[in-house]
Image (cartoon, rainbow, N blue to C red; front, side):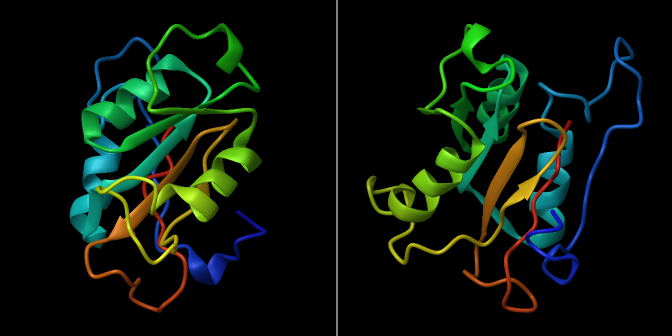
Length: 146
């Protein structure tokens, strides 16, 4: 997040509930993603959820995003069905930035990314505002889910 710059982050989200306590905010539930989508007018159908665990992929799918499983961290051990697979988070972001928005009819055609925010580990959400721009014209910030 330091590399993106604090001025380009609109919000961060986390789940304060401990594991084992039912919560709509803990993955694979999409609570924080849906909160961010509502608060920042994020078009989830044009967004990506990137992670290294099956819970990340399930969260993205439940939220209505496209998903990318990275094979670093826990990724190679996961049994899930992401839309795409990448070697690591850098490759995943490159896939979205260079190819992701124009390889499918559902994807943006302008090649822009409105959000790229890393959570703990390899979790990353890349989201598009429905308007196509953030409030300050910089990178858009989605839910940093964990």
